[in-house]
Length: 285
Image (cartoon, rainbow, N blue to C red; front, side, top):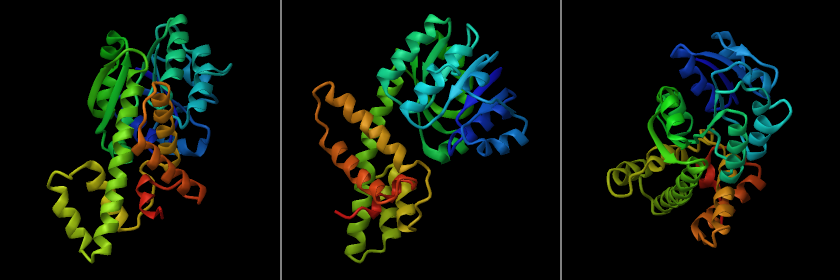
């Protein structure tokens, strides 16, 4: 297929590379052009803006940062919907507002396009190893048509329902992560305060009921004081804020999410927004 890929970042680069390795012809666009250099050297083509990237493509995939970026690349004058050919699949793999995506999806269908919201979980390692969990909302037929693309980027791929359901599923995912990563950070602090061998402690508890991806992957990073981003704090704050707002719109109180969001917002104010989510360990109550 001819694919336009917009957003070459920590995860997008690996995802695009897997599609190229499968034989798809990629045209790429990202705001910081240098981030695409490696893919261009490997055979990808460059587009000057999102609209140009969408022209004459069978599918267009976006993996950008924030809802405002999603809105811009889809709905602006030089955006995807203004330039994609009728019949193309438009797939947003960003974590964004479900309400925003429902609005974009309706506009896409009016133009004869096939929209899917397909946010992912698994961080930079999942993107590199093509083991992402992919939560797909949209028409079942469109999901089936694009499943071979998703299978090049992930392992656990689920059709979650209609427009926006992928994003709502991702919100549930982020709510779980918020509580889990805070628990991992507190467990490590407790172990250190008690004089435990914390590497031994992590090995021990990861094999029992406390075991989780966060414990096994971000726990060792906390011990090593490794704050390199597999998933940025600034992006996790964005996700949790969307989940908070969606919950509030339904008169639902999520106190754990609210507390963890506040902790991360403090870290961002202290200059840690471009660090990985494991840097929650640094929060001082």
